[in-house]
Length: 143
Figure 1 (tube, rainbow, N blue to C red):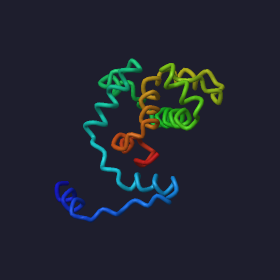
Figure 2 (cartoon, rainbow, N blue to C red):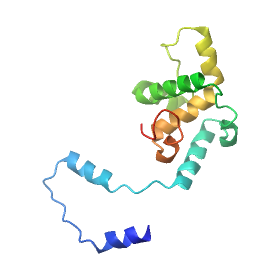
Figure 3 (tube, rainbow, N blue to C red):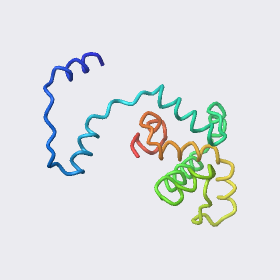
Figure 4 (cartoon, one colour):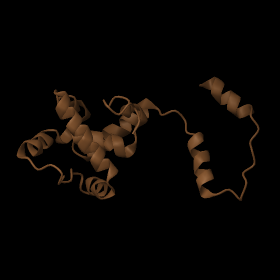
């Protein structure tokens, strides 16, 4: 890491052109993104979970044991994170929005039991925690 810092420090800076479009300036910002710090990311995640009334240590016991239930929870969390209305409701009221696509009582009961797990996954997807995304099965570390 120190070697990279020194090699970047010795490179000449390129002057910024004022005629660049906003999309090219955004791409410049994304190219200079540093590697995520796992300690900071996990501590921020713990803080966000506390806002939702979930303890980080209790999250392990609330993880579904069966693969089918975990996949359902991941799909629900991705749906909430992708939809701006549901995401806004989730972040404002600190609760899971009612999903209308699930019609059977069994699925609703399963989602109610996995509330903490789905909440944690939704936060990971919304906040785009790079380190934690690697541990979510089925996402391949990218979302």
